[in-house]
Figure 1 (tube, helix red, strand yellow):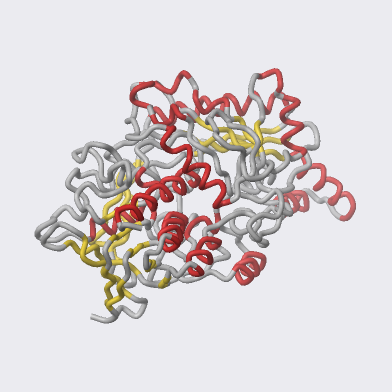
Figure 2 (tube, one colour):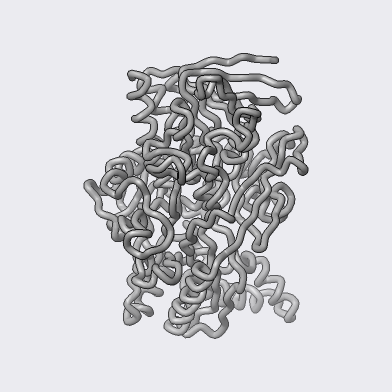
Length: 537
């Protein structure tokens, strides 16, 4: 055995949940050690890598490690072992700072009704906590991350946003005007993006590369709390790949085993353990940690670890408007339609949120270079080419709707012990299906997209017939009051092991129809408070 590291709190995963919790616990006086499977990211090098990349994918800017492989949008079978019947298309990063390095920045709260799906609509399950419990932690998360907004969007607020909203784009304003008679108001999207200088970071300059990287750090990512955590005394060990959670004879966690890229074995021990390694890697680690005493893995008395895998399957549509919309100019999205998030139809089909894009056809087709190549093939050159390209690109519009997906125990993550990575660790095996509830929501979204396109006099329109992944991996170790049907309690403590906490969107019993990051942060801060109290801090 190599290094034997010690601290009061051992955290696996240096994404937003792990770094926020580590920062708060260190400020409370705890000694904190964070193990992160991936390498560190240098922003300037990442921006340069993205600018020079021929194919500008989500992961193009970031260093990759053979010892900590991750899924890629261009190779859905490259790391995942997919067993269908539908492809799981969402990916994540394994780097210090986690997947927030390439998120859009949308920071919306859940609706109160999102936490009571079983009671109100007869589908899914209820959360074991209500919106009133989450609300003060939403406030703290918005302060920590720096969220800009101006409306409750249906979620009651006790305080204003830290910053004024990012202004609507010209495209948002034109769409709002054209669809005003449809009864779908266009709302400003609350987002963790600076509308003014905040927390030592500059205001957004609209560089249009929010996904995959903000070049000036105006959009929040967890690297900000990596810095704060380390200044508070947290030790972050990069390229430390957790391989097992060890359980002692008393049923408590006694250590975390990890490997370095050279294959050597090490361990870390403490009083309290937190696994915050994402909705795929966390259940994989718990299930890999099986022993004769725990043949089903750690924290899995309920059999729910790895089950109820959810995303927000996206209905993607695009059109060519009859008037110039000022596309493509970023941030990538500044407005949306939130009125569709709490439909009375939620008992029979998925609710969804409509996101209005500012990047033309970048996502479904490609950027202006694609349109330019098409026009060149048609024989256009010189000024005629430039004029036609400007006419076409400014009228492009992409609309995407994020679907609610219900928990299904057959949608699951398990370790593929027969398919291993370069370190000999199991790859994640996924079984995933999009059910009729979600597909009916996609049908309803297409109808709304068509009404928007009609109002804009669209001369061309397309609907992607298959789903896209949102990158919102939820539900694989859900919280609940009953140890027989859930993995963690409302404080995110594992029912089976009283010194183990599990953070991240894997604890979500249901996923609503909005991006999960703000709720991840709120729950992580709440759990950190509980842990600090348990430590006597």
